[in-house]
Length: 393
Image: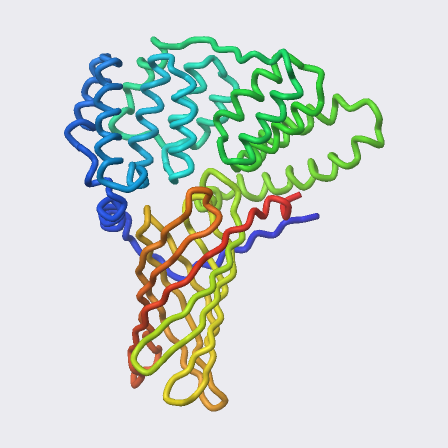
């Protein structure tokens, strides 16, 4: 099966700085004790890891107190804390926190995860994780020395390989990717000739978007299968995976757009209201791990005692809970068609498992005709996210 990936770019706009600032405020990151956070970085720069751990912990606790259940804790703060825990060789807590940071959308996940894997002695996995990883400016030039001076070697007990394999797969399925990688690495080292270890391990890297490495692991597993007929089921997926890797990894913009993981399918259903106008809206499209979405939109409107329809396309990008987007739409009746540019801003509240969100949006509709009337509406709805990794197999 060949995979054709089509990206429709509707507009270009530069909102990174202002949007990130607004997102920080909305997420509660500005409630974090920035003094403790900055002092933690200073302590880390001076090599005082125990002091840095205390200060990072204080910054996180302050953030938890200011937001219910710690939902406002910055993913970047958690990632730095996880890295510092690994420098102190508290690897269990480190792995838990780096996976929490990933699930909160940390853009530096791959960097900090790669450093943690290096500190634990998993060099091959670390090198793969570090490919195209974004390095935070504040630690660039510092982390090399810190990581080098605090390296260790860790081995998990894999005397019960069946249970360890089940746990590694469950962690990967739950989005706890770094913990899953560590278990698979130890399984791979202890049971070099067991094909299922490589085959299952490849799915973790495939989900993270490292398709070439996933294909490499899958091939290693297939080569260990003795019966030729048993290889066929996996060989087809290997071919598809290799083709997908060639498409995605040869296009830097596409890879950046996809983020650290494979895209999901999204379906949005909501209702909107404006002066004398009400509508039911739907969106269906793709949602990537760096919170970018592109969709086809449909709507049924009622206003001025008449029904009308809307069809269009839009793209959205979220920073924390703040999101903005732009699209084009055609508002039509039996007699007329009105084409509009549709910029939007709003809030999106993603659940912990990242399977759904509640969205609140203010949109404007700017007709392309000079005599058209600009209109606005407020919408509320729910988005469901589906895993579509099976479509790449």
